[in-house]
Length: 433
Image (tube, rainbow, N blue to C red; front, side):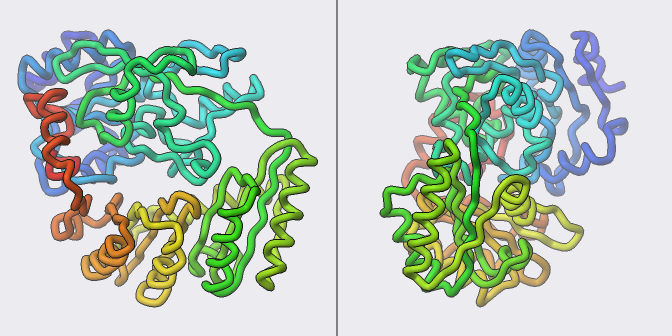
């Protein structure tokens, strides 16, 4: 037993030496490391106090730590440098408080979104997120990666729903921000900083979200057609008074995987039954003006369409796969998907109002040249392309984040203030932070 393992075992925490870690867990952790030597152990605290003790011990011994939840997105982001320890919050998985009347819920960071949704459904409420790997994704992991999904059209991103959190600092101290009421804005900036920080600023232990009522009815309208017609309809819909909760432009390859053809536009409406029906009919009329006929999905078909859309983009295959997050001007979304269709065998979807989306490249198309060409296209349209998941060789060749803004010095100063010893996820974030 190594000194690290024996020291952590003495704290009463659940410690697994690296050699005894399950193969699937090893694979997900190794995806965050690349060719680096593996960490010595995986530790899974069961309380916030234990988590703080583990981090205090890591600080005293200058152990470098990779925070994670279930590990479903550890292959996203840059490659970590020289880790000693993996700290998982997956056993911090309890609901602390659900204030049904206040529409807020506080839970531990290791709780999966699927388990939280099940509990909220019993109270006729929901957390409007539809991220990658929804069955495995933990609340802390969602915040760390900023992964919201198509419902951001109506509800915004994670930082718009996050109203409070507790975190364990690099030195084991516990810090809190926000609160358990929607109007409480204390610590707002800290919560924004933690969203999308990839575990580089602290380990989330508890989080508080605002929740929303479940809607009475849900329907989806799917249009397929030429790039020009879909682009025009998308622009018309964005400027209309219609209020879809999700609105995505889809590439032909993704549409084909969903049983459709050509470029696609999918709009989901949720409200009272009469309101949904009225909006669906108004959208169908807008489509007819563009000579497009829409298919209306209800019930199970409605839910399955959105679940399968994400599953197709984020599926992990044995062949080389690159999954990237893109951001682009909304009016340039169709142009990006056209390039994706013409020059690669990839698929993609873009949230039509925000211009944020995901693309997937497979096989021979999952190479550095194709990624850089698509990144250049995004940057020309005032956007970006961030590589999430990719083969090791590509991550060693292509800068994952592709950040060209002017905030890198500020990010480094923040990292220095939050983690001066550079113990948390070293090398995973923009600029090797």
